[in-house]
Amino acid sequence: MLQPALVSTIVAPGTRASLLLPGRTWVPGAVLTAGAATVLLRLPFVAAPLSSDEGGFLVLARQWHLAGPGGSLYGSYWVDRPPLLVATFQLADALGGLIALRLIGALAAAITVVAVGVSVHRLSGPRPAVWASAVACGLLVAPTTGGVNVDGELLAAPYVAVGIAAAVVALTTPVLSRARWASAAAGACAVAAVLVKQNMLDVFVFSAAFGLLTWRSGHVEFTRLRRLTAPWSVGAAASLLSVLGFAALHGTTPGGVFFAMYPFRVRAAQVLAVRMDGAYGERLTRLGESALLSGGLVVIAALMLLLALRRATRAHPLARPFAGAVVALTGFVVVSMALGGSWWLHYLVQLAVPAALAAGLVVASVPAPGVRLVALVTTVALLGWAAGLVLRTNASGQDIGRAIAQVASPGDTVVSALGDGDVVAASGLGSPYPYLWSLPSRVLDPEMTELAATLGGARAPTWLVVRGHRTYVELSTHATGAALRSRYRPVSEICGRTIYLRSDVVRRTPAGPPSCRAPFSDWSEDLVTADGHL
Image 1: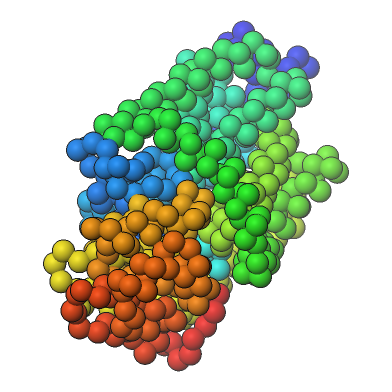
Image 2: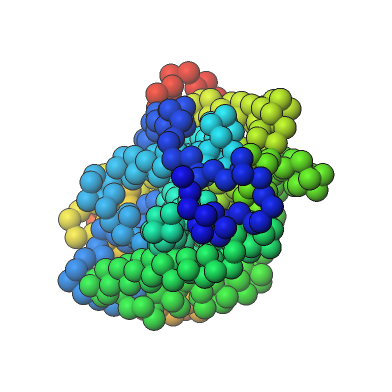
């Protein structure tokens, strides 16, 4: 039996005794099955073309060793991302590279699916939990929602989902010692998510909203919240110190990490605002369309309507505050995605957790119509997964890198201007320029003086890849123009990009494939008859 003193801290006076239930502790087998299905559904895409982010991070992580600083934030390279993301790519590289990375991504997605089910099951029961996991699974396996490539959003998702589940356990278990351990886990996951992707403050937002709403609703006393704050903070501090300590052993300073995570992003936002063009508008439109077509926003809107009509589930005394916290989290996620600036499709991965939680709550609140709505969302997501089996995507960077690799000699190096880390990764060569992404280059080397010194100096790369006419004009009008004209000659055109070779070097001419598009899945490559476009 629950001790009266503990019960009084969880449920306000006057609440019916039938609701005084400790949270459910077992996980439905169907939730675990959804997690396993997530891994299986992602397997056809493990050999999908390398993305620019995946390639850049693999190159960067490969040389981020314990030997100490290499002249930049992460060894010889600089990127505006936290160290836990780089450490995860370092693990993937040690385990074999791209395929290992994709398998780590599949595991991250599966953990997210199960953790979402755990949260919903604890407050609303097994049936809503299964549907929540099904929605999470669908949103995390489809190329149409950015679920193929492994980016920061996907690798942070399990920390977010587990952190939310831990916060729910902390406020629903009547045993204070267990609640404290759960609160510490929530704090650790909150910081870990941020140390993978700096805008993933999701657990912070959810924990604050859930705690406030449970207190204001009278279900949890402020004394209990205060007792859970200390372990939450200890967990957060332990997570922060562990990651920063690991980074320091690799020569990466806390000050450098902080600048990369936040002050740099402020400067980058100013650069993006100036450079905004039609491509950014197209990406924003595509992101919005994909968000709507995925059905995630529709489910969240349904939950908001149920809250407004006071029809949100009452299966547990904290279910309604939980629903309010999910809505608050969704608001934060939408703002976070909007402020991202570049509006890549993988931003949608951040929406998967709140959308799946909302789906479970909708099913718990209005079972029959809720199941129909959530089943439709899941079906649409799985249709997106099926479409990914036969669609093709741009593989330019990978094809160019492989073409250079076929004719390169030992000791060769390459620079891709500006950005496209997949070129460097696929070539297997190093880069003497510290910026593998265009945004750091434009923010930290705006006049291209460092790039000019690289092209004109003793460490000048053997190969130079220039992305289109616009980039060539930029290079020509900055300090890099003289080095480009005097030290390099164009030798090939592949996938719309010009390949330059240093003038004092003789190599065979690199040749690209007939098409610069490749299937997402080579499992059904024989079925592809025409290029598709996501």
